[in-house]
Length: 84
Image: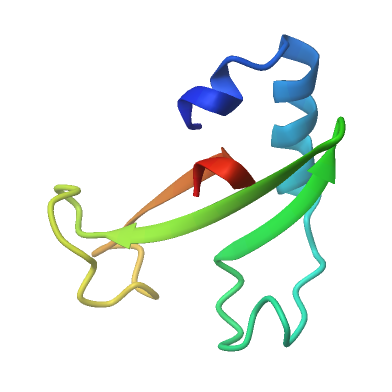
């Protein structure tokens, strides 16, 4: 999570994590490639974004095959929209 999310009250951070875990509102407008790796939601009067990036196993470069878990480390970032 970004610094802005980390500074929020514990209850809001926990609710944001739950919102990401439960997120299933992937539509053409927010997921044009069908990758399900980005989303946004409103919570506690704030807009949040989340993004999943696909790195190689050393977290140095992008994964050569994001669909292959033996070659990929997925990193989830949750941020406030204004931090994007």
